[in-house]
Length: 165
Image (cartoon, rainbow, N blue to C red; front, top):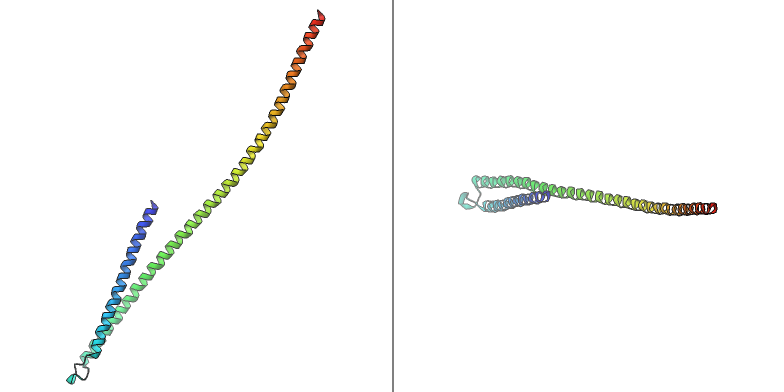
């Protein structure tokens, strides 16, 4: 379920990033248009006989340059937001990679620990089997000696009883 949430969040982040990029591109296009207007206003001469620039022409050029500077400030702000989004995304993916690396390292340590424990238990089972086999040999040997002793006692009793008769 968290994978779906991460995928949705990533899609939202990508959409936000693309929206921000479109905003920066739009501001750059506006800047280009303003510079076009500025070039035209610099060439515009509405003074005496069209030979000189009037005060109004100069003020219009200054106003256009102010608009360009304001637009540039907006471009810097929006570009900074765009870069911070990119840095956040990079940091986010780095944290995820570190987290997955930590998890996989922990899983590998757990697997190694379990394999070691498994080998230890196998060796214990092997030694218990050998010990059990040793005990069984002694039990069989004791049973055979006991049976031989019982048979010998019965034989002696029969021999004594036949010797009395």
